[in-house]
Image 1 (tube, rainbow, N blue to C red):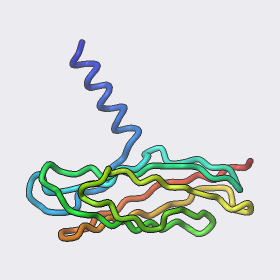
Image 2 (cartoon, one colour; image 1 turned 135 degrees about the horizontal axis):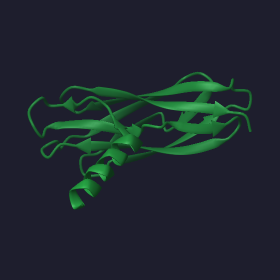
Image 3 (spheres, one colour; image 1 turned 45 degrees about the vertical axis):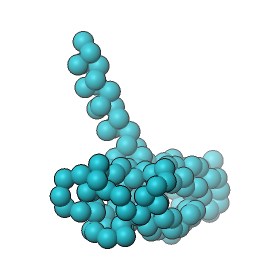
Length: 132
C-alpha cells in the first residue's frame, strides 16, 4: 500500500511540475533542470498572476545560473532576468501580467538557464489569457 501511495504521489508531482532538459555538466550529479508549472498559468485580461520556476540541482551542481525570461507579445513578466546563486534557494517568483487589450488565447514565456560554466537549458511556460 505504501508503494502504491508513493507511485501515485510521484505521478501527481510530475503532472504539476514540468522540467526542462538537463543543463550544466554532462556527468552524473552535475546537471540542473528548470521546473515550471506544467498546467501553465491562466490569467484574465488586465490582471496579474504569480508563478514560480525552480532550479533542480544535481548533487554536485554548485554553480550560479542566470535565467533569461522572455514573454510573447501581449503579456509581460517580471523579472525578465534573474541570477540564482549556488548558495541561494532555487525558486524565482514571477509576476505575469496580461494587457487589458490582450487577445484571448495562448501565449508562451521562454525561460533559458545558463550556468556560470557548462551547457544551458531552456523551457517554456504556457499562459492562457481569458476574458475577465
